[in-house]
Image (tube, each protein chain N blue to C red):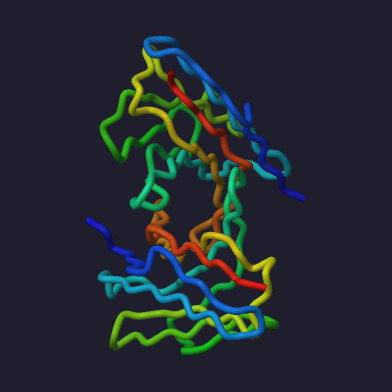
Length: 110
Length: 111
């Protein structure tokens, strides 16, 4: 059962434009969400998180939005840079498990 | 600071051979430890997690097993590898339930 879903396996964006990566979840008990960035042959690294008491969290070029009623979150990268090209996973922890989405491969075109 | 080590980085093994991937954590005690596999179209699939020495929970029936012989050591094993065991394996630890830290991963190719 895929409790965290990323329906877009890939996304291509021009450098300087906005990248929007989407994530949906089914478990209304999730109260904390994270985004991870992963380069090939490396482990994922933490990018940004958001608590369910907020609907927005910003960190530099990265902003995560949470819509609890829609069970949807999105990661915005503005402006996108070629170094942002990677696979992005959204995740939701609960108890001893981290549920991950299937990932979205972002390509930023110079 | 806390660090996590995972090795080897790459491994090519013949079908039917055994497997042992090791993960160690430094700078913390009693971490929750995890083994994930990144599979195409399935994101990061949780294989095993451990909340303490000798305590292993299996999430997915696999040709794999895990052991935690020491507080900060987590080992992923197989007695006989299958072709389908090929993939990218990640060890992770969590200080609680708010973040996970990952090792560099192991690319396993079974030939």
